[in-house]
Image (cartoon, rainbow, N blue to C red; front, side, top):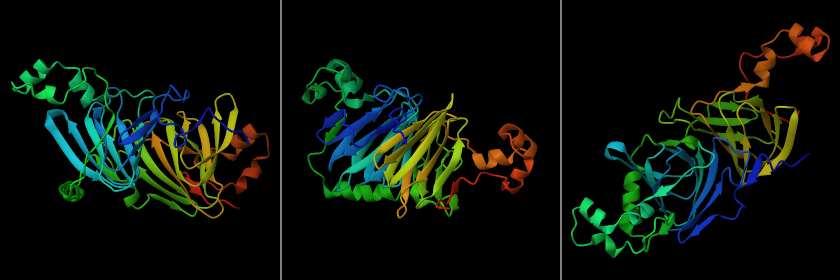
Length: 349
């Protein structure tokens, strides 16, 4: 078995590129993970009282998955759209390109998100850098304030964002406000782990978060893949989408076949990520004989297409298969023919 630094990256164990009072952010983009094209993945950790400042991404949409903790998010969109809601573990949130949003830890523990983007080098613009880049007189005039209001707190005259800040205190009123927003549904949010998985087999389950059941999605999708002990995600490919996997727990073996016949087989564990370019052939095996392995799988399309080896072989006659494999057609009489892919199968046979 070979390790594959080309396709894999240890997101959890990489030193965060940004460490602030309130949390940290680790990025996997084309600068430090060169195989990436059309996608990037970030890890956001917010300490108690930590706040990811209101910001937006000029060149990318964002799809986030909450791993642990609890957060309050606000998305501000064109025509003064204002959406505020809580986010709990297992929920995903979609933010269209250019929409301003913030993430606020409202739990007593660390809140952790994995964030996917549909660009290999996502750009950031934050509210702090934006305000600092504008002269006080322009801001005072814009807000019709003549008392140099902004000079009271706009101490730094440069346009660098703070990225992550921290509250000085967390009042009970904030907790009550969070409880209020928890009761409100929002079209930006989807409870991926709260739905019955659309795919359930003896090998595992898959919950699909795509534009079919989460209509706001555009350019991104997210699946929750749980492989039972020795379960296998069948060999397959996605014609229209790259795939970006994050391992939440467990350990798996993956194989990726690239054009030109290059085969990469490697193991991944919790905190590691794997990037698979569009239409590359690949499969996943849970190598733990006792425990489930859980992946969050992001795609660079809101409706990722899927072609599996089970359906692919079933689509062709014995004569075609025997001709290309150079064997007797009768050998394929015992090949199970399926009308659709099996998707996830039990291993250990």
